[in-house]
Length: 289
Ligand SMILES: Cc1cc2nc3c(=O)[nH]c(=O)nc-3n(C[C@H](O)[C@H](O)[C@H](O)COP(=O)(O)OP(=O)(O)OC[C@H]3O[C@@H](n4cnc5c(N)ncnc54)[C@H](O)[C@@H]3O)c2cc1C
Image (cartoon, rainbow, N blue to C red; front, side, top):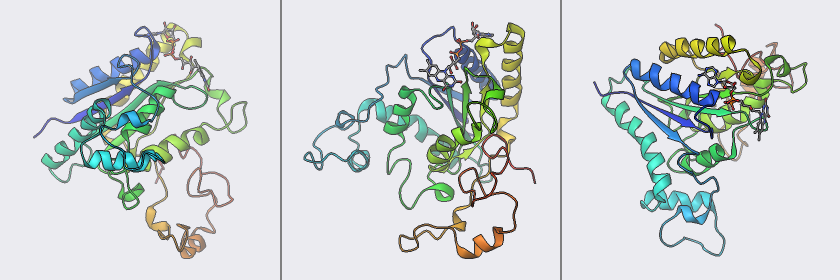
């Protein structure tokens, strides 16, 4: 059987940081499980964060009006992407080869993990740049291939991040508000949109204000989790079949589904809330049956 692959996309400037320690734990734990582990250390690579015409080799389709998505799709098809983007896409592509070679029943064969410190309630700019420039149209999604039908539907992905704020600050009745809402754009809008099965995020709350033994315990918990991460149930999202996927119908929830869900106490997801209370922990824990 082909060796399985995991990719850690990592964004921290300091090798002495807690994020570096979390990355190292992941590399060790996954290697121990027999995975080939790739790391994209974005700051060390000086990865370009801005999506520009420099990402394309050769002539543009429409230099008068540069449309990044369209130009990148054509360049991807014609093998004219810049070397740094092509290299990152190749790391993601390796997993497709592995899927192809694996027993078809095994769909859990690749994990993409984003490891970062929370910046302004989201990822650092350099990691957003990686997403903008690597998960491009055609390669990572299309109008026909998104969500349940997404290109990476046989792969798993997760966020692993540190915060400055403590856990109690990120509740629906505390200062910063509900962490589930903060996570929705990345977990649904990026990962799930591209088809990934999204695993519960690994959140290291406020390591800078945690005593050394507490930090060691966080890393031990991470190591232990990674030992069984490939058997974890993913987070739940609204099935694509709930929606009428046509421009005419506006991609809205099917009326019969709406009727069926009318008596449910909660909405479907953090964002598909149907005017009801949000389903508890929708973006932080898998749904209990
Ligand atoms: C631009 C910006 C925006 C920000 N926005 C937000 C925000 O919106 N919300 C928020 O909550 N925070 C925010 N922050 C704070 C930021 O999220 C935290 O500073 C960061 O998450 C802390 O993680 P770190 O890896 O940098 O910790 P570090 O400061 O590197 O580490 C914390 C402690 O862990 C120790 N450590 C390192 N390695 C190990 C090891 N192997 N074992 C045990 N201990 C170890 C370190 O020595 C240090 O004492 C922001 C920061 C910036 C710069």
